[in-house]
Image (cartoon, rainbow, N blue to C red; front, side, top):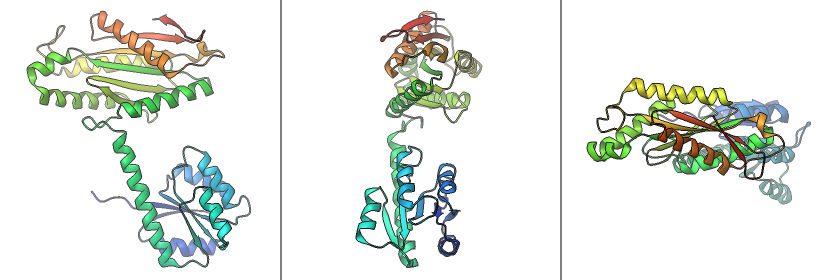
Amino acid sequence: MPQTPARVLIIDDDVSTIRLMADALSSDYEVVIATQAEEGFVQALHSSPDLILLDVVMPDMNGFDFCRKLKADARTQPIPVIFVSALDTVSEQARGFELGCVDYITKPIAFPILLARVKTHTRLYRQTLQLESLAATDPLTGLANRRKFDECIQHEVARANRKRCSIALLIIDIDDFKPFNDHYGHGKGDDCLVRVARLLRKCVGRATDTVSRLGGEEFGVVLPDTDVEGAISLANEIITLFNEEKIPHHYATQHDYLTVSIGVGILDDSKLGEASIDPRSLIDVADEALYQAKENGRNCSKMQVLQPLSPTGIVSNL
């Protein structure tokens, strides 16, 4: 499948300069433009460019301050920035590199140089994104891996603490997976894990939710801004889907098809008060809820609400 053209965001208050650069780049790149820093920041957030070409001298905010703003925001920090400016002193260029730019092109623009550097830095950025994606992906199922899960739960719990909002965690375990592997073989076991991953992705629809393979036959779903009702609804939907799919498993202890058990851990914002929680506490209550689901006969979900009324947290069972 051919790769989509890289997207280049040009931020410059000089319309003629924008036109010249856009004309030079438009045959090979998708070009997005902005003539003010504020507009440029909105474009950087929403158009997800592979590279930003940034003027230094602009009326509302100079390029150095704008670059500092980009690098201070996690959403735009990774995007490579090339300064394009008539300020060509060594000190000005050094200042740009200190702020995190990847290159510096002086005006008047030599367009062969512009094209060569845009090609180099868009390629490097896409290669970096690809490597980061591979490092965060479970190779069998294509879901996020344990490393990505750990990063996600850290980030979302910190966000819940900061915003005083709810967060839910589902830990999902395939019931009787060892006898499945033992009797059908590890090849069929791998096929089963891939199918389970596909079913979980089918249920978890929001872009903000993260489905991960935690290891073996265990999966995790991080649900930001999700209350008790939303978490229970999703857990029930997953249980129902597996019961409808009826993936054959004639060696299971309870049914002749594959089922899952789900532990649901919830931080309800109404219980948060002035306290904060750590990710380990949320994982622990979800693990305990999963244990209860297994003890309750499997093919079901159980939930625990984390109430951080003390440094260690007090748990309410539901």
